[in-house]
Amino acid sequence: QVQLVESGGGLVQAGASLRISCAASGRTFSNYAMGWFRQAPGKEREFVGVINRTGGRQVYAYSAKGRFIISRDNAKNTVYLQMNNLKTEDTADYYCAATNRALVGSAYPRGEDEYDYWGQGTQVTVSS
Image (cartoon, rainbow, N blue to C red):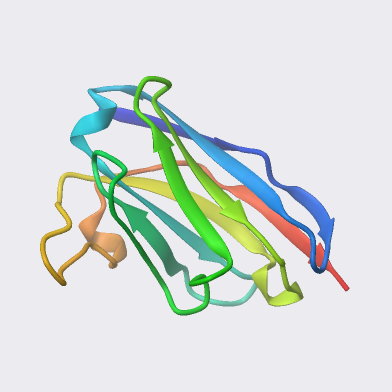
């Protein structure tokens, strides 16, 4: 089992930056690729991005590309989502998730069913 706990969400103004974190415990953190998802009010949960086990490769959804950065510190068992130039449409609950699946070539885990463990989420609200 892997336990995931997100933190760092809050209320920010449009254009601001925010970094949210996800702390892992349980099994060896570096064995898992880590993904970020978000769910806006009234919408389905969507993929934001994923980072591989070593932190050397990240893949982002189109909505996140160029503004969001995923990083990880395996010594601290933590993955981060740095969000820059936030927009009101970024308002959502943000979830981290762990997967045994690897990022191989052009293939990467992007579906909810490809992830094995989930955090409880942290709320990010972007005001205009």
